[in-house]
Image (tube, rainbow over the protein chains, first blue to last red):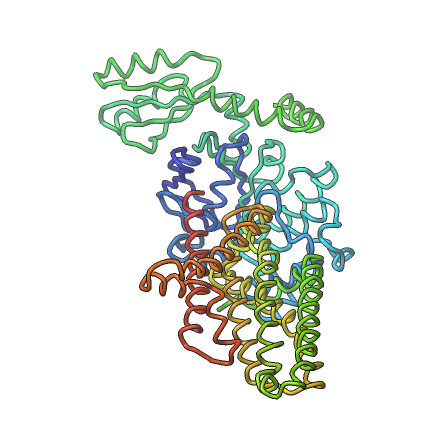
Length: 322
Length: 256
């Protein structure tokens, strides 16, 4: 549903995201995880057509975001960062405006507003001025405007930020119920949130993808293995085979660039020395051996420490269970 | 132009729930009413003197002595007031982040800008139409040419359109409404007083400078002359600033 290829966005000389590639299939709920400034918001702004990419491309529902901007925008419901709303309008007036702006005809717009108000639990406040609503209701209004034209893709930027714990739970449930028939990309800097709502996680740090995995896979990876990136000059197939045969290696895959390999190692064994010895003995050139586990762990720590104490206890429990 | 109507209506909604419109409207009508009153009072004074002097009586008429000065005065009030109405158009949306919402809806940027532009123009038309009451009152006491009045209003509407287009542009430059208003004042003032330099420079340059002046072109309308040069000036002015706004928004997206 969403395909991103080598997406790069520079703010002046600074790359906010660099060479991002990932894909999200139809019906998946995917979490964008990363510390503040990792490039989550920028990626979302590019996908929704608010910012043009510096280079690279992205397709939504097979349509290129630059060439078919309007059609792509029709297919995306977007909740921007900080949930901007026209606070001087009433809920109903605002939603009617949004429905009409999204190109629904008058009758269809009225029906869509009626249905969405019910879906998002806004019946009680439909005539109230948005500026007077509590943060939880505002968040619902933000979700409602994203849902109006029933788009197949939802992009939600930090949908639960700044809410109290009860509201967070409500919004998470709402998102999960929406995800049954839609593709959802949501961002968060809170790991437990993503692990509850999402099937797949993309971890970003400093504009690059650090890991893409299912929630279960990711947790296992953090607990039991370490990742190493190798750059080796030599015959690709043979290298892959030799690396996989090495004791202590869990998984080997060819990396994005040529001569690059990603190797997953058992955590409690020092396999790196064996790996380099094997490669050199075979007469291949070992150009680089980079441990990736540290950065992932660092991010993990950052993500966990930013959650509230209750969630932290929850996480500890989860870790203990493993 | 899809979605234009939605933006247009929302913008009107925003005007009518905002106190700014009511304050600006009240002050505008109070000042315009004062100018109208002094104009009529002065006219009645002159009329008494003219009654003793038949030669002077031939010169005295409402169109030249009340209505044309009134239109000129209104144009000055507008120059001061319109930036206050246009300052929030884009600056506020940039500040609150709703511009992101608007620009990620399946709308063309031009539809957004035209919706805002025409909604503001309609608000000004409503204010201007309130001044029609003065002329209805006047028509009960004396005779004047309605044709000239109509062309005068036509000129004022074009003038308003030009003010709004410039206001929209400066509002796109900043997140701060005060800055947008001050830039609007400054730019409109410059476009007004640039005409004064016309008499100082040489004949060729003087013509050009005079042509640039935004108030100069109103003159023919208030005299009852419809000159295509003046109409073209105002329309070009509007098109230029709406286009500039469009380009500026684009350039901002690229820089991020």
